[in-house]
Image (spheres, helix red, strand yellow):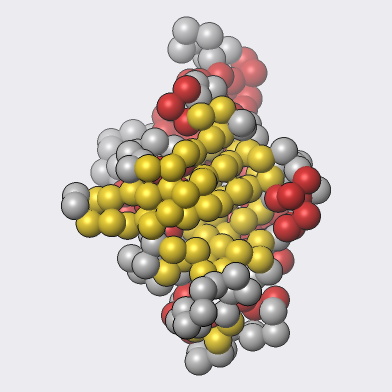
Length: 263
């Protein structure tokens, strides 16, 4: 079950309740609520500095929560241990792009949680090959990641996340700085994951080729949720600069969302 209905009736895979977080002494998240139901595809949208990346980093435990609660698969994050169920693709600029490793080695590192005592068996090696084929990088398996283009490197990071066959996939700006050909490959890859029932949370500046896959958009501004519902492009605004959409539950006098700020 997808869309807003899935959030209400589906099993919550991600649940944030009144979460606040700081970076240094600066408040970044200001009491946000976010629920992602099983099988749902949710996009986190907003301008730079709105709190999108911080929100996903609180979910995976990279940023401590000042107050509020975070749950994964119904378990408080502080008690959650089954990380093989979660695939995470960081922003490409924050991933270790200069590591002198081969494409296969990078992707294989994502499979470790599924191995027994770190020993790779035939099924694990097949999973690595399958993940590389899925993102169109099987022919570069033995190449150093330092020799790849930005788009190819992003494909490798996504293969690393997919090789563990996660139930939840969290991606932070997967299309940023990626060439059109790689964008199309990534969109097809994600479409296959969604068809297989994977729950997806995406941080995006704009929907782009992923728009048809998005069930729901959550728009952040200054660490607050201003919109949680249909993607801005699906509410009759067509994402034209200067077109506003006000969250139906926003407090009186709240600044409207200008969809042109999302790109």
